[in-house]
Image (cartoon, rainbow, N blue to C red; front, side):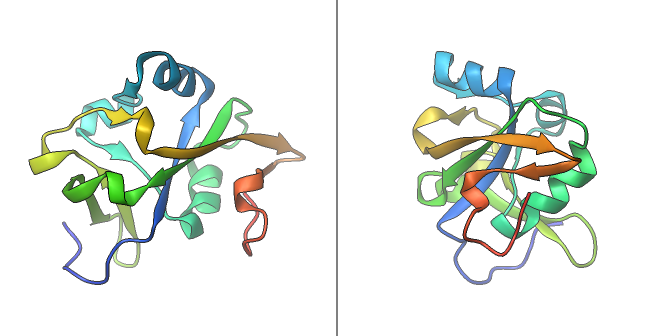
Length: 133
């Protein structure tokens, strides 16, 4: 279910990317994401406030991750917020007209290695926010 029209999206959304996916994105200039993205026809993203929860729910124990900061202005109408439950809406990138196109390297503003230490995720993109990943 799509989120009703509301305020403009934030300046940035975030992609938790594996080392292999980040390498593919740099090498090829684009990626269709992982198995989940390909099977659902969209690239799964998070707002900054959702990164910690997403890491803990889906990536616990992984030490091969990067956090990619994505410029939402370059995603145009391909960025859609959808409900994951009654209270949470997550950003997904489909591409124009929900056509499922690859996420391109030129939308990535920054990439930072996520470090897993003592079962806690840390990364500099979240420094200064009130979160730790």
